[in-house]
Amino acid sequence: MPAHTIPSLLQQLNTVVVGKKQQVRDCVTCLLAGGHLLIEDVPGVGKTTLAHALAHSFGLRFARVQFTSDLMPSDLTGVSIFEQASQEFVFHPGPVFTQILLADEINRASPKTQSALLEAMEEKQVSVEGQTRPLPEPFFVIATQNPQEQLGTYPLPESQLDRFLMRISLGYPSREAELQLLQDNGHRRMADQLQPQLTADGLARLQAAVLQVHAAMPLLHYVQDLLEASRSGQWFVQGLSPRAGIALLRAAKAHALIAGRDYVAPDDVQAVFVQTMAHRLQPVAQAGRGSREQCQAMLAATPLP
Image 1 (cartoon, rainbow, N blue to C red):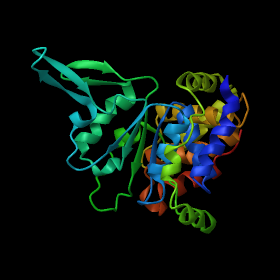
Image 2: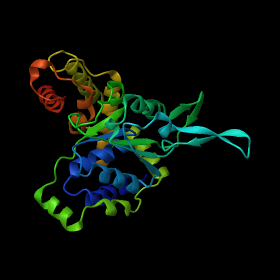
Image 3: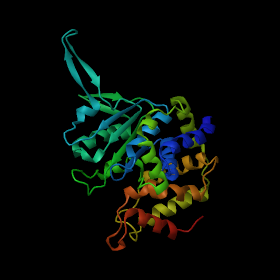
Image 4: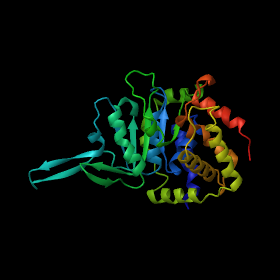
């Protein structure tokens, strides 16, 4: 099992995304757990650089799509074109037929185009012209998103938000990290020059190892307590689904594996809870807090096992 590659993978990513160790760890946790990742922040803080660095470090084939208002679903999935030489229609696959799809500024595309990703993210396949075509293995979507108050953005539908295992935000860099970026003229070129730390087979073995991480019965009851608290009506308009609970546990197992353990601790659940659950929840009106702050409050109020 190539678990020994995880520290070097994290170290390499931290040389490109300076001063964001927690966010980098969250990204690696998400991909090892087999989930899709949503990075939300204002333009220019390194979202795309981080996505490039992840793709190169994981050693996977990737494609980038710049989402715009005129992007069509067929621009993602591909089209069949009649070729004179063969006198038949030949399918030309779109950029979704890759291992890592970087969906840049996903919420600048229309809802129709956003929904074209839904089947690919959930089923690892696309339906084009009545034919189902499987996507390569593994298949991840790393999407970047601008805040909804930015001009020219369309909110992602709840069904698509639920397909992202994690949503993270980078935030502005520290003064020291920003000084380094100014001295180096940014780190985008550095991200494109990173050497792969894993292969597709190595990643598959790590993902299999994540599923083998043990979760004891008290830990499972703790996850259930969190799910039930979210459904009480005290914190959120609607509670978390069983699928969200499975996603939370999978992320906690990946977090435990990165920490070098073969069992899940309550600390693992707490470490990934906000990033994994906040984008699935809407706080009650009287809370006066955002979903992340409300998740943290509920987490603090739920007794540990």
